[in-house]
Image (cartoon, rainbow, N blue to C red):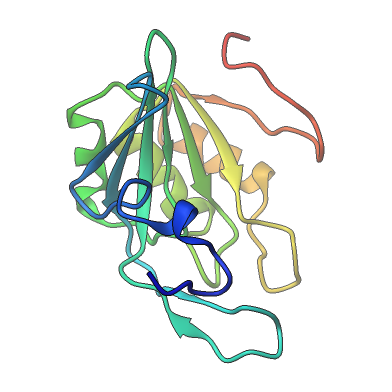
Length: 166
């Protein structure tokens, strides 16, 4: 296999990569990773001076841990109606949802996505890293409350470790 962007075959082979609708079983089946739709562009760069390379269809991930939580990472998705279907097969314990706006969902659409998926807890991601990402956890919280969303909002501090059992 030809390596792409320096990833060795061991990390980018058929045993460790998947695609939409598929599920990988890892760690002797203790972890399952399901690839779900995400509406977003998809390109990667080896470094800041390299041209972008098309990286396939973007996805979100539903990660299920045996006797543990089910986590949904939305990826850099936009809001889309079928996001509600992500929780058809698993109750989502924790949803990681982008709120930055400009390149991803902002707080309004992110709150709609959380309402549609109905997770137990939600962590906002992909915000505040550069000026055009204007979404904030405070605005996201307001939008969640306006929609009557019951998910617990968790906003970790930079470098903070959180426990899902908290």
